[in-house]
Image 1: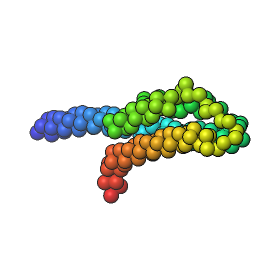
Image 2: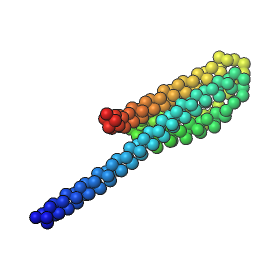
Image 3: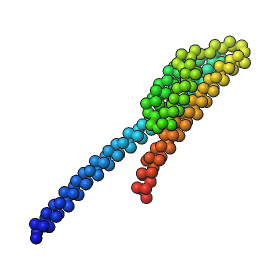
Image 4: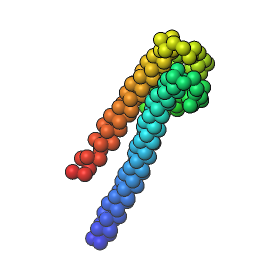
Length: 172
């Protein structure tokens, strides 16, 4: 009789041990995939914020140049920084919506002629002739900032739907 008890207990222990190992392995894999997704979203949000900041820095530099004729920040420096952030966004865009917006940003950059865009030549006399280049830079910065904000919203929304949907029920 004790053989039946020990044998049954051994079978149950083996099944329990196997299922525990499988469950633990799955949870480690799941945690790793969520960690990777979270890191990718944070990198994308960071790149979008840096892109937005650089677009406004470019506008501020050109606006200051139209007023006093000097660049506080080199437009080519800012433009190369914008290119780096767009490349980073392209690598970290997690959703098809974000990738579409990155494509739109790249189209805006090509329309604005980055990185070969020559700083506008201001004549120092007429603010009317200078206003076209400044207006173009403002529109560029505004459009880039709006698209970068949209990428951040997409990534925040995706992170909320993926992570909060799992964490909230677990917290009760």
